Length: 66
Image (cartoon, rainbow, N blue to C red):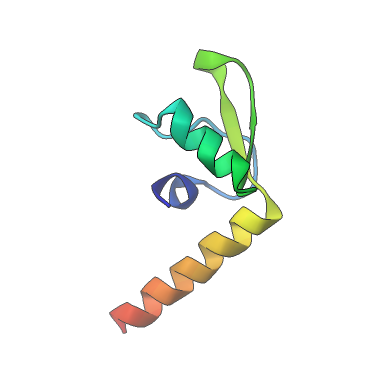
């Protein structure tokens, strides 16, 4: 979830520092992100499913704070 919440919109972006290739691969397998690039130049973006998951989770967290 940290990877998904670190995403700024749905554009291509570099993963947050310290994100492992395994984390990217797992999120991609679940259909939450798309990955492109090689090793050090790897980028990701949220899929429609990933974006809706993040929005739902943000609303849930905001409701808990209220």
